[in-house]
Image 1 (cartoon, helix red, strand yellow):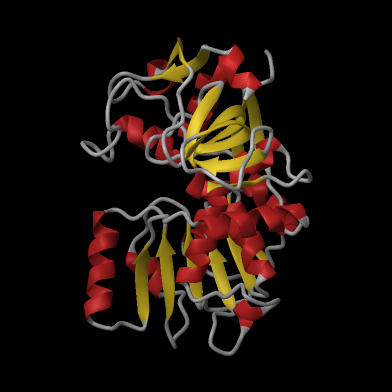
Image 2 (cartoon, rainbow, N blue to C red; image 1 turned 90 degrees about the vertical axis):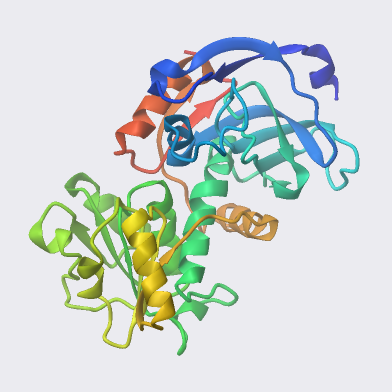
Length: 342
């Protein structure tokens, strides 16, 4: 608790209105937050930026988020516990942890509070940057594949008689996609991946059996080079017409689990549900679970799940990390490290 006692204020980045992008982030000195009941105070070592962070800033979920301005963004946290709120057990000051603080966020700062219910131990084998990368991106990839019927309760379980065998991962070099490829391979599936031409070798290195340049005609049509039809699609790219997916799904049916659903996709998903369609679109909103965070941390500890880090920035240059994320072409994860300097 000594670290918290010596710091009364902290550096942070916040925005005070919707819009503005990276230029809307302001460097401020603010009081160190106090953990409330059920929360832990973390001395931040690293945070990872996800598209949801700048989508909130853009106002895509207004009026629900942010709950109030000014707002310190970013919810994927990694650091050291320095103080416990009332009723918290299982942690002590000095513990290295991975946490998700959403919707309150607060990660672009030297200290942040997070719910103990979404805080897990960070194994020594997992760096702060790797740990901060897992909660949203790897958590989404895991729930995406589970929603498509993939199982992870035993080696190769996903390729069982009742589960999908051939899976397509779109935007496979991105934050969610690069984890989805690895998790699908862990489950024993045949993976076809789409990405830009420069990342074809990268996704192959993740374990993809086939890789497609999304800018080629075959890539745009999502056609497997070997002619395979897909039992499941982990869609991590921008919205695409349902007809594109319908043409490449197996005749017996399959699920397209979409992490970027728009209004059209949501309407399509509803229609599929009420008509009991064999080929169906499933919108996914991440519902974080502590046990899944622990499992992902263990996979990372064992070296079975690797994090590709696109770029790392100190807190003083976090606005550059924000702008990089908004560009949409990162390979893997974008990290802000609190202890690093320019």
